[in-house]
Length: 259
Image: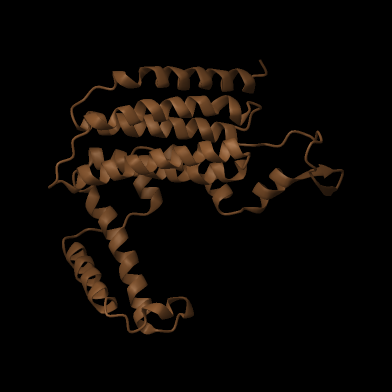
């Protein structure tokens, strides 16, 4: 992923095609009702599809600053799908994360000190929910399930380099880093920063929205391939979208090389 001068609008058709072909593959996916892995894979895949549609909506609206944030979520979703498909017990780590967060929420609500949670104070469903999550969490911990950091999840999926590079850049956008908004909204005029005005030409900013759209398309396709293979299916139905992604990669490469 690099900041080169290919417009977002040029990449959106690739993402649109990827979503169309990946969505057509959904009827081929069979989920075992007794398998949390299958359920979680399908749920994450559908989430990534929705994220992809959100990227298209933002691109069409010209609201490009939100695209890298959603691309980050797509990358995280793919990492979890890759681990689910390759590690039979990985679903337990996802359940542990979800359970511990809900337990913490209900513990805080029970204390009654948070004004944002006053609606929960004395609610008849609060204590049963808190006890349920506390019990589930203790069972997972007793079974030896541990919470995995984001870095470990990437490492288990053999994507450590992506965590150190692409993911770090995407986090800068998600966390409103100073360098990110400086680059997006200001330009250097000698030793001063000046605000970029719409419709005017300025020194090129290092922007990642177009590569992010392409990365989102890749996450849609790679995630779908993982789930299809897990179900014993081939991935030939995605060939057209994969070819479009490859062609766009070549276009980015030529642009980066000055051609």
